[in-house]
Image (cartoon, rainbow over all chains, first blue to last red; front, side, top):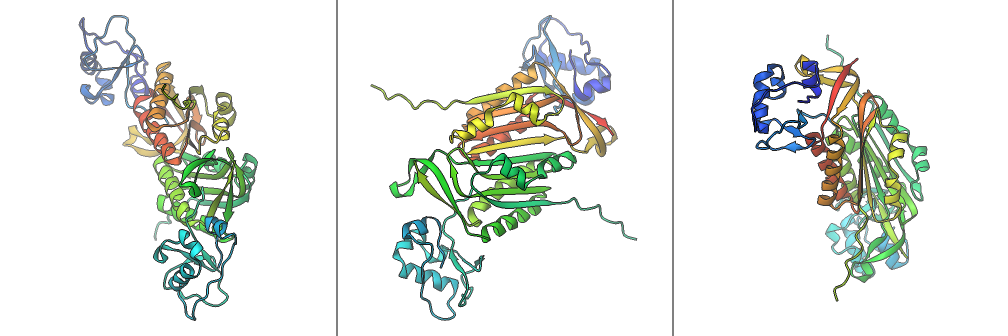
Amino acid sequence: MLIFGAAAMNTKADRVTVAVGVRATVRDVLVALREQHPGLRFALPNPDTGRLAVNQAFARGDHEVKAGDEVALITLLGGG
Amino acid sequence: MLIFGAAAMNTKADRVTVAVGVRATVRDVLVALREQHPGLRFALPNPDTGRLAVNQAFARGDHEVKAGDEVALITLLGGG
Amino acid sequence: MMKAPPAAPPLSLRAAIVNGPLTPQAEADVLSLVSGAGGSGLAGAVLRFEGVVRRNEADQDRGGALRPLAALNYQTYDPMAQRELESLARGVAERHGLRSIAALHSRGRVRVGEVSFVLIVTAAHRAEAIAGLTEFIDQMKQDVPIWKRPVWA
Amino acid sequence: MMKAPPAAPPLSLRAAIVNGPLTPQAEADVLSLVSGAGGSGLAGAVLRFEGVVRRNEADQDRGGALRPLAALNYQTYDPMAQRELESLARGVAERHGLRSIAALHSRGRVRVGEVSFVLIVTAAHRAEAIAGLTEFIDQMKQDVPIWKRPVWA
């Protein structure tokens, strides 16, 4: 999964691997991310408010992630 | 008294004369203006809401106008 | 001993009434303020409003119906207009904590599509800049003795 | 026979992410829109916002205390960031009845005092321009995947 901003700086990486079951939803991925990468919890205080982009578009919590999808964690933004 | 904008266009003049008594206030001038220049009433529907500048500064209704003062009728503005 | 307060940031105020349309050159002649304000890194927001003469204007002699315009002729009451612009700039800058305000307004004829008014405000953050710009324009239309006379097409 | 509707005014939308600070030249390369919009006399209001990198930034690693900055390094998620800018521009223009929106954002390093963001909106009147500009910036900070990384002085 792609990560950016402070999440990437703190982790010193621009991507992390998250293991999820088949037919995992966006919400499943956020929960797994929080459990498997404690260092990213600061950027994701609550899986319910976290946002993922799937294939470069914001995806809802019930969206199902498929193998090969490009998944990105959209943490607090800083444009402008 | 100096007039501007639509008031001046309709009157085809950039000043009008208003006769007032001694110790006349701004409000007295506005009432006299309305009486003596019916053609300006469209720009001054009510003397209470009319504004005069005396010597290039907005003056309150109770301000006393003196001989030699520069008096200007500040009708609806159109800057911008 | 009392601590000296931090040096007050320089507040820059400019107001000018110029003959004819506001061109980039006319503006540059009056201002060198925006690049200065930006370049220091003190102002995070630079907001610039440009008023352009529109091609239609309500004709009060025809019940307010829109009518094609050739130009507007701006009449200013001098020097009161200039002084009111300055005092408005000072008041708005103080009330909103702006770093600078520059206001230019045309006098005389400005054709359709040409610029008759430019306002530039700078501030630490955008919220102050937007609030200050909005208040300046609203208040200018109340208090700065400038009138427009339509020149119909 | 139905009357033909009046010709829809051309809505101009531009969004671009460019490397490094936004200079007048970089801006001119992307846009020719403002003068065009103004010159026609259809837009009465041209509003331009410039975001400048400020000299201090809150340091989250030090409890949010202000700390002197050398530059910001903007990271963009491409091409999603570009697409989100475009879709935001379209939505805001429609909701506020704007005549045009142009948005430019920097990617990579922008030093203190340099410009990282430019937004230009044109509209018939200033109210729509101000409302549209405000909504665009607020929404951009929610939805356009751009992050800033501080480069401390």
